[in-house]
Length: 196
Image 1 (spheres, helix red, strand yellow):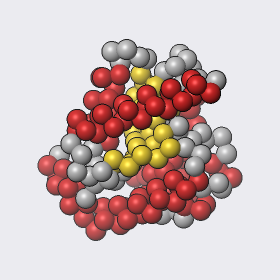
Image 2 (cartoon, rainbow, N blue to C red; image 1 turned 120 degrees about the horizontal axis):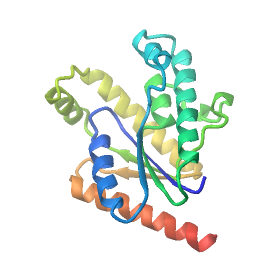
Image 3 (cartoon, rainbow, N blue to C red; image 1 turned 30 degrees about the vertical axis):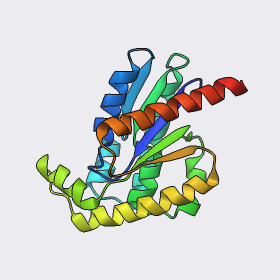
Image 4 (cartoon, rainbow, N blue to C red; image 1 turned 180 degrees about the vertical axis):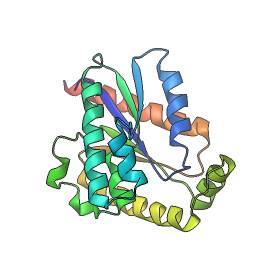
């Protein structure tokens, strides 16, 4: 893939969608940019597997198929496109509570890893307040559990060094977040250009 594949991850209410929207608007002035959201709900089966609260492995299978579907879309994009992806396989591990050391399991064959993952750190109470303001009914204890699992997962993933994982501190405002994301995208692309 001749694209720069960027994923954004974090608990619900961390601000991923807002950040992606703002970065997209800034980058599209000079670049081809494609924003995508997982799951794409490519079909009713994926939605039903989540809604019906099926066994986690069934849900994982459906999400992995969805990731592969999105990859086909990415492959058709023009060279040098920046893909901004709201959630990728990391969220599947965290939300389904799969141990991080299981990330090379056979069911992930064919799912590409992002070049950079931005992990939005967020206090669960902040996420809770944001979600409640949008009319959702989040579970604060579940948000705390997810936050703990994300922190552990991202720490273990960063040791593996096959991609860059950039934590975005909870105290950064939106402008600082945008600056950090754009800086790392530019640095990654310059490094790739220098080595090609």
